[in-house]
Amino acid sequence: MKGNFTRSILVLLLSLFIIFHSSKIGANPQPLPQKTYKGGISRVVSITTHQTNDQTSVTIVGDGNISEYISKSLKVPPRILVDIHCTARLLEAASINVDNPNIQSVRVGYHSDKIRIVIDVKGETVPAYTDKCKNNVLIITFESKKIADRKNPYHSPIKKEI
Image (cartoon, rainbow, N blue to C red):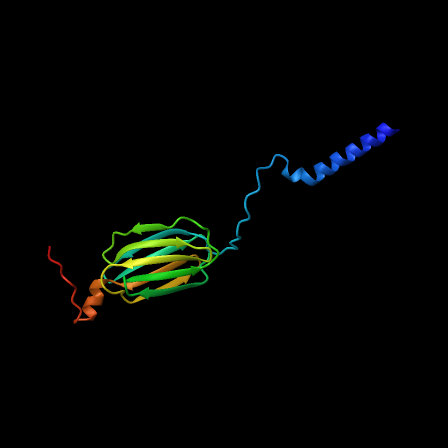
């Protein structure tokens, strides 16, 4: 009778152990909790530029909807700054050199609460620009330097002699 009681206790303990730890048997270690993205942007998928005679467009495509963003121009050095407010993945920053007469480079930085995109503009000033967003695409369009110079006859580019 005493042996049956001991076996019953062991079977009960083994059963409880299996019940409470069955989800961890044969499983990989649990990853750190990750932030949920809920359909919003969490990273930039692609950045492309398009040049025409009168304007330059920068198209930024995300992996989700771009719902909140702020864009502004900075004078020194001339650049356009775009902050996309989101729960971003903490990825490595990227810098893309652009073969464009109006843009020097595009930089992308990932922060915990936003994705920052910096468009470094060639020249002394940032031309007038517009931005529009639809779903996961943000398009920033600005005038080409040639058009901006034609509108301002007093503006003459600096010439450097070597």
